[in-house]
Length: 307
Image (tube, rainbow, N blue to C red; front, side, top):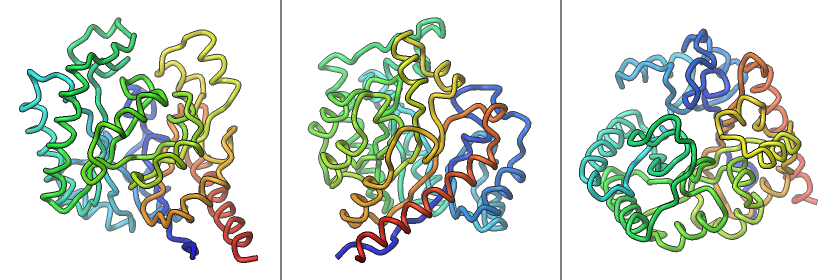
């Protein structure tokens, strides 16, 4: 029997203050962001650069607004065998931090070879450097070791495929799922990044539903995506052009996605995470739009299933 409504709906702060693009939303304070999230009825958020990092202080701040920290995005360089031990130590620091914050998941994303986030490369080099076989092997080893560390702390590692990285396309997502141990490495299902990478979001959910332990919901403006592809525009510029938006404001049909998640008895977080320029897309307005749309979609799917 399908779950009636198992979802816990949260929202990432990236709609207010962008972690990927310095300068977007710098005028927002953590209290304004948290108060707006709380007013809209969101129950969780993710770590962002605007939040204080001391665990006890941050937890008290979140508690004051009735919000829980769901997780944090942790960029890795596990594909670099020479840095693997150092990277695992750094990852472990965040595992312990998130455990102290009461989180159940740690989000991992490989930055090696990425378009914007590989610190070993010149910022002018915005091409994706695909991994060699040896680098894939090192990445998988790093993920397995990091996942064991998470498990030792009672948490799960969820891998976040991401636009502009070496795990972006359908083939790359399928490959990392095939190479990693399902008992250790779980999947963060992101609708927007799936479509950007050429993977139909519903098809991805059907193919890897048993690996999904965490969900990011974002929508895509089809006309902007097509322009980005035609002009070979980099990821950050695509975000500024408005490629992503909140669920219900783009081209993705979320009803079958919600239905499939229910069918799979998914009971985890649904995190609205739509990278937008807050000057062009008013954060509160779009956060409200997303919440209203998701709740209406969940109700509609439930009604159809109960007929």
